[in-house]
Image (cartoon, rainbow, N blue to C red):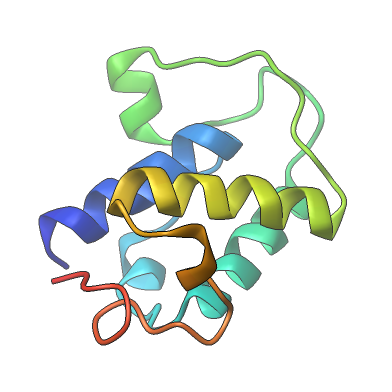
Length: 107
């Protein structure tokens, strides 16, 4: 996984206060695949603010206390915002079938 892909994963982890395993991230080929994984992690996440966070967030003490969206539409909207910000693409390009390498230029 190249730097832009790593930065995207880190941005998603920070935004949603989740931890995505490297092995899982390396398997994401489309926006939809990544979103489904992220949505699943969010749904499994306990509401306890003391729950375990990624080692990156712990190392840099990146802690957010804002609540996380739980509805699929709200998570999708927030997820698209992160992808747009991290990759510098237009929001209309961020659709479930978009491929990271071929369509969004992730190296």
